Amino acid sequence: MKTLLLVGLWGSAGMLAAGGGVDALPPGPKDISGAQILSHIKTLASDEFEGRSPGSRSEQLAVKYIVEQFKRGGLKPGNPDGTFIQDVPLIGSTSRVKATFEIKSVAFPVSAANDYVARSPRSQADIIGSKSTIVFAGYGIVAPEFDWDDFKNVDVAGRTVVLLDGEPTSSDDAFFRGETKTYYGTQASKLADAASRGAAAVFIVHDPAATVWSFANLQASFQKEAFELDSRKTGRSQPTVYGWLTLETWRRLCEAAHQNAAYLAANAESKTFSPISLSATARFVVHNNVRRIVSHNVVAQVTGADPARRGEVVIYTAPWVHQGRDVTLRGDQSHNGAIDNAAGVAQLLEIARAFAACPTPPRRSMLFIATAADGQSCLGARYYTEHPFFPLSRTLADINLDSSNLWGRTQDVINLGSGLTSLDEVLAEAAATQQRKFSPFTFDHGSDFFLSDPVEFAKAGIPSVFPSAGSKYRDKPAGYGDRKWTEYRAKYHHQVADEVQPDWDMSGAVEDAQWLWLTGFKVAQADSFPDWKKGSGFSRKP
Image (cartoon, rainbow, N blue to C red; front, side):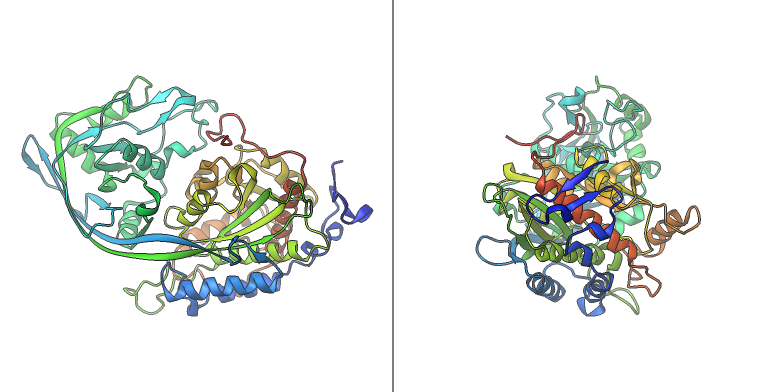
């Protein structure tokens, strides 16, 4: 039986044995309150907060509320300047992109309504692009650990690069982690790699059989204001345009250029693949409505008890931002984002309060970040990793909270980034104190991990987890949890209906918050740092 000794804090009362449960917890986490979590959700997801969009009155309300709750909970400012705020400079843009394709100087008709979606990440109001050759570069992945290079040193500077969605198909767990997703397959990874090689435009082929997102989802997303970190502050290279082509449009384009899309895709499954230039060109005219804003990470801390270790830190993150208001809707226009993600912030606030309430804090410091612009490529988390308050080399882990379990207690727990880090074992040990099992199962083969804040910490070398309650509910019939999550995704996720519901059972949210408090405490007390597992695709930076 494994035990955790809270060294020098509570003596023999600090022994947490497997099966000890909530009664074995010290003051603070034992008092985590379902009523308080619900109160936070009701406030953050209220119509008054108008969906918590960046650069709006609703951001001001959300940031002010979170700062007030950190102060009320007894936490110290997280910014070394003595404030709870980290400014995050952003560029917001709404793009209209006119694409023109030609095959050997003959126009190839495409429609923005049916064939492609596109936007520009650049801050220019109007951009008239030059005609550029279209190059097919397979999956657009360079992964030395898998001996994989889709570019083969082919110069794609100034070209329009077309890529397949996802990553090479494999059932071998040692090759791109088999059926489990890796970061290489994400849009963000593909865009960054192609942009670093000077691509003028980057398009991914939308295959409806390979993704849960419909092309209609993409169309709705690309019509909204998008944000990027202010490139003047980052120096990051960017293409003029990026977007998606429908699979049918790509097939027609290939056929007109005397290529076969299926044959090209099959070749892209091989390590020997090299980019192929089509006898086709693309040109883009962009009209951007651009604004510069400063959004905000809200940061608080509990200073570690050990003078030799308090300069090291364990981080908890939860995004406060959501989708704001949709003024084109009749009736309810606010995307309140109650489960996703006011509930995550609510748990973050209670976990932070619980650490501050402990008679003596853990050895290392604890940092709590309510991040900005999560739905916009995790920009708040990225900005923090580029401008950290603790050295990244002295940052042990990031524990991310997002949506929450509001339907009761579960028998199991999961990690959406399962199999990547040694934190899996810590999560499992902490869950065992609640008689819960850690399941290696993860939603959508782990892809959600790469679409959320922890991936930015992972890219910076920090072991990161995205933990969640499992789907096996106590005292509920088989399949209850799967039905609830399926219903949520269909009826509520990213819709105005994601509001506080009268039938919520807060016992699961409390149990999960206590589980994650104990996980962070164990990491903060440990003699060694967590690390990445072999084949994860990530590693600690020197």
